[in-house]
Image (tube, rainbow, N blue to C red):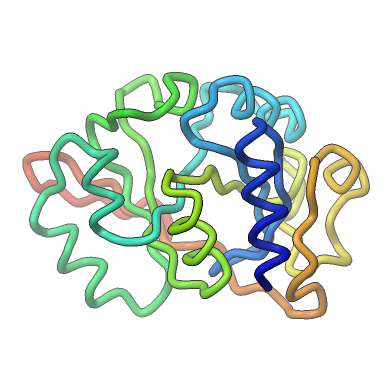
Length: 186
């Protein structure tokens, strides 16, 4: 697994795209602070830039470095969540501008997948995570269902969990600074 981490980190550091197993589905990832890399993700997915992507972080400590103010309720939501949960926060900071939604929000997920968590801790920055499909196409549930365009469009494919069936995409909750909670996807 060390070689996979090293190769993925080298790719991320040079602004490349990785295809990697996450705590939910196979994801296309890049450095969340690199505008050029994020632009490559939008182009590969044929996704409108107005449709925001999400970021993975290793823990609350990393999350606190990239969100201006985390409402207290976020900690409770994540503590009691039974499935991977992405929370959309107001006022992200130290993130590439082309990743932030027009309403100045961005979704983050504290990732509990062993590979991803170690990758995030070693990379020391959030990593973009978006499903490995062309925008509008079904989300692949296993590696063999990933479109060849995606496979050819990334710079590194992590060689782990290729036979494992993915879980469903994460739950998505929008949380405003004043504590208002909106469920986007259960």
